[in-house]
Length: 177
Image 1 (cartoon, rainbow, N blue to C red):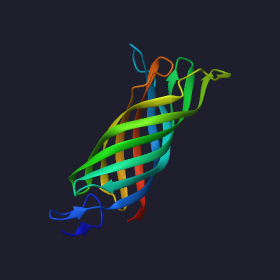
Image 2 (cartoon, rainbow, N blue to C red):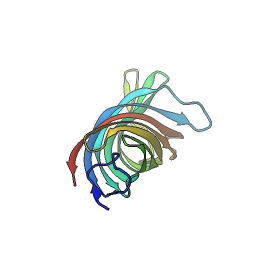
Image 3 (cartoon, one colour):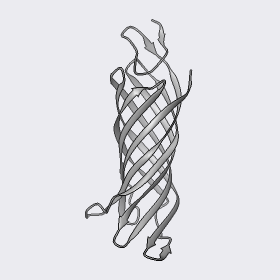
């Protein structure tokens, strides 16, 4: 069997071992879910980073990412602003040549936080770590450009709340091996 040259477009009878390095960025819609309470107001955020995708077969791949993520929530009379370095690790299953489902876990390190309340800025005492689950889907040719929609479900309690992030991404292939 011959190795294929791109992900997501392999034909039956080939063994995919493509390795791709990509960058991604785009906006996010972020909020926090209070413990035993409703989600707080959504806030526009963003994320940017790099990922490495290696195909294990013609339909299955593993993706490791490093991304900066601007998250937070709109609270009563103020905004909670959070800056994270996130490392998601996801499995990708290609259900069609240019469509994949993804799921996995992420770990995050809080780089900075701020609460803006009217004219007052404060730094709340928050947990410095975040972790949770991630799932979504991607469209496009992995060896060129892809569009992804993904949901991060925070499991760690940060100030008696959990992060919730909806990410829309555009990724560009930087290198194919």
